[in-house]
Length: 486
Ligand code: DHB
View: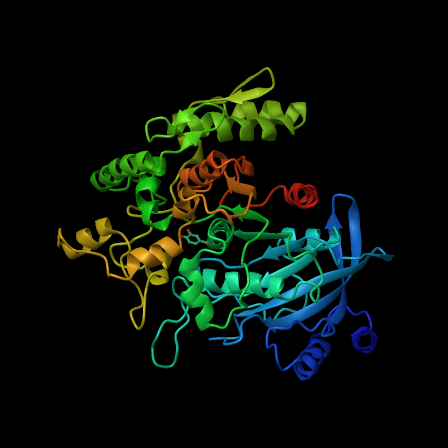
């Protein structure tokens, strides 16, 4: 192994797709025939990247393992493959990443398919992967099937639960290769944004649950644990079957982008359903707040997340910058270095809601989520009784029989309610305070469920941040270091 290592280590080069391809072909030949899921540590291209960090630019030399298929029976290897980036030197100083934390960063957006097969190196246009690499961590970037993939016979093969099954298979692949693959496979920290944040929440919450087993077996996933040590969802679009009701609770009175209000009767119906759902969760707020109900959730979000977020933002400004911000936002009271305001003023500040009513299970079946819950040759389906009944006019219509189980496989909340003992115990959760892609209660409930279980949860809202923002990547990288040192 060592000898081949020397042979295969190619000259340092910024972009070497041709060499990567050569390495990929050669690796198949040396893979032990008995184990189709053995990682070949020698199949890499050596690359360099210049990465801006808080401590200035760093030049990172790293080994790039491209398009490694992580299941034995791929449905579509273009998606069921991962890239591994292993730092070997930072600014010329050698780095030993053999026991380093592994950042497991998916790039799924919109529940679309995600392929890393064409990548020519570590992802540089998102903050977390390059910063993690510069910190000396291994970066794994998995692809996954997504909702729009259609086979020649018209079958949709990337709808739920394909993406989470694939990401679990990718985690299993890493653990299966412990010792062969650089990095500590017991210190995997998953991350992703939006739909990718939802999948990250699922990786953390549903680890090793037997409900996924038949799907994992079908694609030839490694027979080992898919647990991750930490999970860092950014603006997770999750708890989808309750997202319409939660949205109306949160943004029901905010104006639509083109002006005007969403249908108030529909909004009120959904909002009422949210109260029932929220009560059924039986979650308690932080620091003795008591039960989280629809009635008290505005106060809870304001005190627990929004005011501290505004406070952090304002405290980081210069005195002049702060004075200007406060002059432009007289609804914020700044006293004793703390921001305070009312929920209603905050809603006005956010302005337009991104989605109409209902916002996820659309009556015309045109949302990403309608497609996510398609099946076979059916591109899109209803996944809430509310929308199904309203769209069909049939008050007794029932969801297709396979849907309740699939909805569960796509929702972290039931697994947390059951206290899944294999779940990630360390969580870093972020969302923009102006993100109207879903209700802020989605993050509120996820964080509360974890806190109620006694897990280590670092949650923050980015003040004035919209959907998908990441404003503290260096803090996340430091958090990984601290957390994984345990
Ligand atoms: C994403 C955004 C959405 O508003 C949504 O409903 C699903 C996914 C995304 O950005 O991934």
